[in-house]
Length: 246
Image (tube, rainbow, N blue to C red; front, side):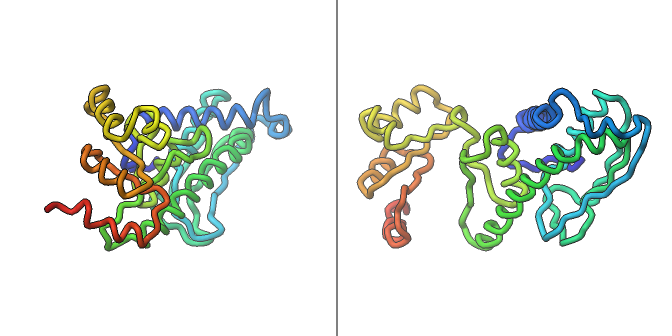
């Protein structure tokens, strides 16, 4: 199994997500049992290899390992997986990603759940690598969002980091993100930031602003991060000098 390289995800949280995702994928697919795999003699062994049809950044090896580990524990047996590519590696068309051997029923039962996770996370990592390449050599840091597939929040944020971009907040619990509705309900940007600092002093405070006046207020209130909502490139360039130290 490849070493975890998720930049913004704690190892314990990542390990928990891998287990949860693998179990959910198997339960969804197998339910009461794989009736087609049951047609195969119980003691039959097979070997296989998984290739990629197009150039991609590999991601999701730990999820594949977990799928077959759970199946081995449930049905008995020993699945052997030899990874020829690690998470973060670039694979070209027709490259072999891994070779696998073991009980035929186990491999055929787990293949779709394993490939679904591997393909989804590799796609996220591949697109992230494309964006990271565009920003290479600049001072730009590319962050992800919480707009992830349900149930795959941690997995996709890991894939973003594998691709070379960076993680924004993981969820609603690890950082404040004060938006328009929060600002209105709290009585203004300054009031919201003050309350956030009082309530959870160690948490980052981020504010989304829509105007120059809101930006200046957020700067005065010393927000940790300020997000410019739907600002044009021209507007952003005209505002850069505001945050420069005098």
